[in-house]
Length: 223
Image (tube, rainbow, N blue to C red):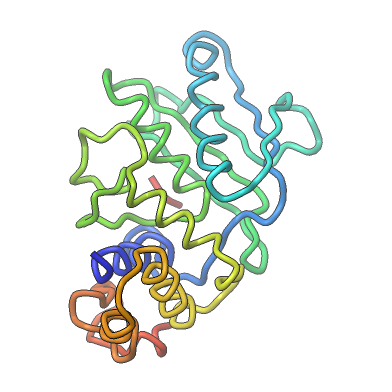
């Protein structure tokens, strides 16, 4: 469980779009959420706000609903262009590891997947810019039947926003610190924590997108 969850964190939080290694980003300011558009967007605006507030409550970030033209707005959710790409998407802007702006586009072309889309993209918006495919997570495309964040997602969020991790933290340091946080939250033995979180990283924790096996301490737009 520790190795699987630590690897899921690395894959979700320390990459962009399943390949590019990336330093840690997260919110460190209140969220001012605007949901724009009529019709279909009006019908799901409550679900969108609930999804964002649910994740924000886990990590202790305040959320305020605002109008689209409010100068404080830093989190925008709107309908995707039906003539564009047939997928929901999220764009995350950050400075020095601090998320400063998010835009989510909701695609309505696939019936029965809206709640999954909303919650999947909301997880991206909180700092998980990639996908832990082997984990029981709403971020995984293998879990297509999952519509709500899982217990693993909650643990990943709690880890990303733990005080032992900091915005802008480099990949190797963030990976090792996150593993320690997860070990503490799972209550594993000191020996298991050392075996999994020590360097070099075991094969089942390495980020395969980074190429050959690399010691964890040296490791250097989502949809």
